[in-house]
Image 1: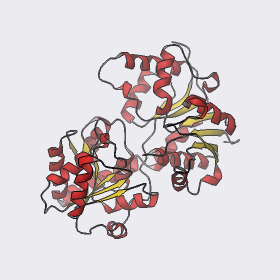
Image 2: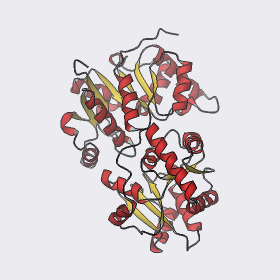
Image 3: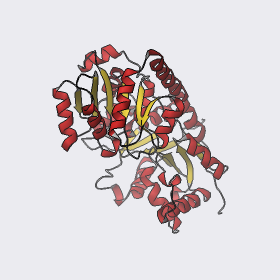
Image 4: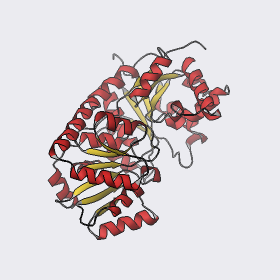
Length: 395
């Protein structure tokens, strides 16, 4: 690229996958000589997390405050906040690592003839993680509104590029809207996760002889922490199973009581706080299996990607994309979503697997990590993000 094009990355969130994806984008765009401004959460509580994830990169990009979407928003709304950050940064266009921040509202309003500010037309793109309406099984007024608004904004050239992490959905959309700026972006398996298991357990103070199941991330009920705890409690007390829970989980009620009971018996440990990038790698290196007992989860998961990067088998709710990937790619075991007893059986099955099955799971994880590598992510991103703004005549 002859001249450095200036792009604003607008990412106001710090929980879950958000900062990890922001680092991927920042690394890869800087490698391609883009000039970047980052609109992020700079409040005292969040700023250290931003610095942790973006260490080594912050001096190469301008930082702006995006405000707090959970509370007071800059300029009163997400769209107005984006416009204000664009003006302050001097960037020519904006890219949202989580396009979900604006998608639903924009689609519904566009269906009724109301559009974002004109200066965003053809100058906004992003990664659309959870477009649930696109695969909803039943027609509804809300689904009709979103499809109508999405189609209008796409055909009228509002969207510079829209990236989907579901390769099956991306392929379907490319057939439905030929030539539209819709692309597949691999959910990348980050590097540096295949650590030494014994050393990782030593550093974290975990038992060397146990079979460690890792539950990592957030404690929202839809993530299924309560299912993991209940399944562990149903296992025989002499089972080698050990539950490691790490992240800002904040368990409540019977889940907290169950975790305490397991911990008192030496069968669980809870790291209930923000986990640094270095500690995160230790957690995945230390475990034998990774649990994803999610309930009605849509799209991919950074936890799955990290498990694959670490070469670990997974136990996953058999629903939507995660269930399909686990079954078709041989990444581990699936169980009917929400069924504790079936989850318990899968925990036992994982621990009882013979050497051949364990080797097959590890080989499948390694193959997945190669297919969804950081290199594949970078190539897909850079191929589409520099494309000129498309325009599709009104349909």
